[in-house]
Length: 449
Image 1: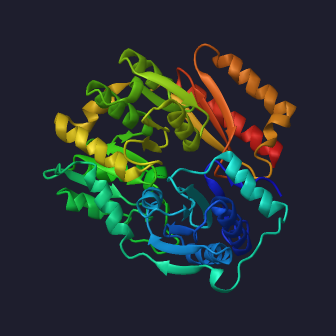
Image 2: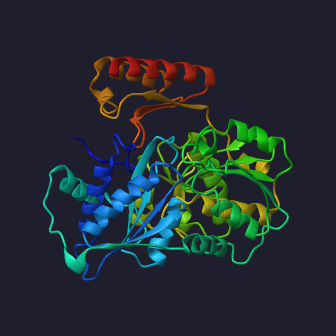
């Protein structure tokens, strides 16, 4: 069996790849690794999104945690960033989220935060994997040392109060906002927070039934929402993914604004007000070159990392930066939360709109993106790293790289969260780069099938 943890926890099809047995073993191993130095009974929080498999996996995971003596507190359906925040607020030893983020309902995942609300380091994940994959025997408690389970009824309220506090009493009164909840974890928190701050809210996809999370909605399926926003009289639209750690926005004209533009809007505003740490924005290698060039013109330095918000966060913590994120909408404001937080990003953007009085369509002209295409080559998790070993594929990639050398770029990488290889090409002409990306995708799929 290969490595369990990807760039965002353990993920797979629920009940076949991510089984109850695996969830139980993750609970046991995580409880041991994360609390082995503690002298007290460990306290571990669990939150989940709206997937039908969430209850099943929570039961199995909780059993594993309790078998190692942990006190498990269930937070119910709640966004991923809420778990990160509440782990700190409630002084827990760890927080666990059961979610597959933007993936469809048959998938699920397990991601873990340490007691400080940060995603686990590679070293800690490898220690957990070692215990599971190598069948390491752990000392099992008995009697009154066995763990217990309880529910927290105030989790959603506490997270909303934290979110509202970011605006320091500022009201959103007079703003009209459309919201796409992706039938996911934000279906209560985002809407209720915006209403409580005084906004007039128009909501879609906020009726989860366990199987409709991310189904043609949310931040990965935005076409219909863009049309919806365009046809109603609102200031902007906010669209979240299934666990609400990422945000994309739609301007009043129905144009999609991705994470790159959201970040540069916020970075520019913060820099102008002396609040951008070291005048630096942290991005990944997937960030559009248009952002990099525009940031330099504004006196904003760019630090780039591998793809994955965990690597963005590591860079931020290492060098003392406070703003970073991904084109996909994972944006980290370290002054407020320790992970990507869609609601946090939305509120700060709304605050900028309110204070400047500008329309989002005007603010989003911060840079002109270089044409970019990202297409997924669908291959199994077992084979998605094998394209580098195929001489035909690698020669084709080299040829495309040479074609765009000095006038664009090519980036090929296995997804850390899905069974696919992502093919990204930037260049001067959209149709040309789309043709080349499609060619590489078809070749990779044919060679690795």
